Amino acid sequence: MNNAKKIFMRSFKMTVIAAVAVSFFNTAFGQGEIEDKVVIIEKEQKLDLPEATRVFEKVHFDVKTPAAKPQEYKLEEVKLNLPNLPSKIKLLMMPDEPLKKFYGNYVKAGFGNYGTPYLEAFVNSKRSEKYLYGLHYKHYSSKNGPVGKSLSGMSDNLAEAYGKYFTSNQVISGGVEYSRMRFNYYGGDENLLKFQDIKQVYQLFNVNAGIENLDKTNKASYNLGLNYYHLSDRFSAKEGEFLADLNGNYKLEENKKINLGAVLSLSNRKDSSKINRAFFMIKPSYFMTMDKLRLNIGFNAAYTNDSVKSVKGVHLYPNVNAEYDVVENQLVAYAGVDGEMKKNTLRKFVYDNPYLGSNSVLLHTNKAIEFWVGAKGHVLGKLNYNARFSYQNYKNLYFFNNGDPDTSRFVVLYDKGNTSLTQLTGELSYDVSQELLVEYKLNYYGYNVSDFEHAWHRPSLYTSLSGRYNLEKKIYINVDIYYISGLKAKNFVKNEVVSLKPIADLNLKVEYRFSPAFSAFLEFNNILSKKYQRYLYYPVKGINVLGGLTYSF
Image (cartoon, rainbow, N blue to C red; front, top):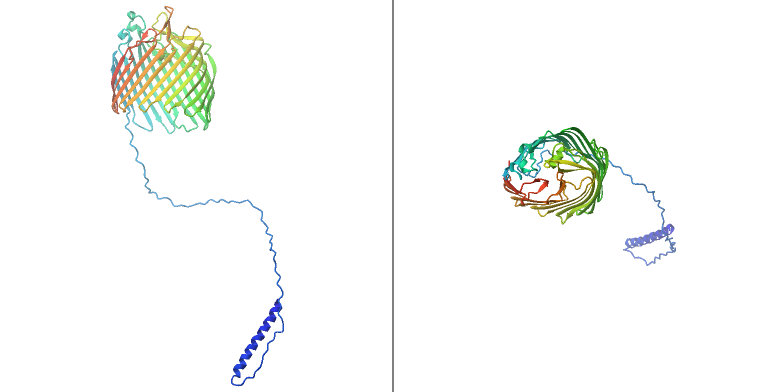
């Protein structure tokens, strides 16, 4: 290839030189005569170039793929030194709504037929985040009653002082209370009744203290109450009781916790004899929530030093309760089984029946077992219902009955054998609107006693219908209807069983508010004016009316 190129270049140069030479001679000898000559340039050598070799195959390069390595990260903390925000920043705040006027003081006074004055007053501290204290006084009496006018009069008086102190996570409370209740034993022959012989006065003095944690978000929650009660009557009966009541729980997880309840009662009773009594009960349980199921499992343990074998010593009971959401917010099915020792004191009996005679026997009641099933929920958003069926078995269940020979004073009788009770309970409440609420309750009791012919003075049916209505937040109307039937008693003097007539009681209360601080009220009780007997030989007052005024400041 290089040799052919050299030959071509040499021939090209010779041709150029020849052309230049001819041009020179023509110019130099242009004035003379030029002879005719022929110049022949002859190319003797043939230029043949060899064929170039062409490569048609693709060139392949072997590229080595490096082995994959895991991605490595290196995190470094970046510290930014930002300048401080200017201290003077004006924040736009929503204006606080003014607090509504706090009416801490309240006075209510009225007067009614049967010579009935009524006065009740509350005096409380002003609004505070640290403390609360107050006084409460109440007087209600009737000079006359349903039998023999003043021979069946009564009075109820109460005076108490109370207070609470709030710390960051606790509430400390305390108080003192005095009450005086006067009743007359008018359940005898009206011609033989004498005021001094039938008068009964109960005086109760109570000192209490307590502590409760306020922050419910803590794992541990508790409420401890301490009380001392002293009860006395006009006939030298006395009872003192120290009572401690504890309720608490410890949260293990969001849906699991341990509950604990405990009651300790140390009491002494003085009448014709003296007796010291001890009562203790503890209720530990484990509570858990699983989706639609709520389950509480535990046991109850009780100790008493009563003399009766069925309640004396230590007793253990199951404590199981389960709830299941069949239809959310509409139907909840529940069932359970438990038992407990029920504490009975002279104070409890007096509040149940103030016409007790002297030397009432005091024994606790052993609820050996109870089974129950039920359903509750909401219908149509405003109708609430609860239906419950239970079977209970008691030992040493108490009953009130007229005494012998004085039928005007009641004695406490205990069924030493087994007492079974079948109970059906139903509740309905309908929130028609914010102005109207209607409630209905039904309780059926089926007693089967061992030592008596009937469950003395215990009803077989108790039902009630209540309505609450407010008109333009000016007129407030409350209506209550009660119906009780199945009451039976025994006159041991005549040795006969007496069936008490059914009780039908209709009550109406109306309040008109002239302003938030001032109102007037009118109450009608036993509108049907039925002098029914809740306890044998003790008819109640007929229709009685009470009217008055209320002032808050």
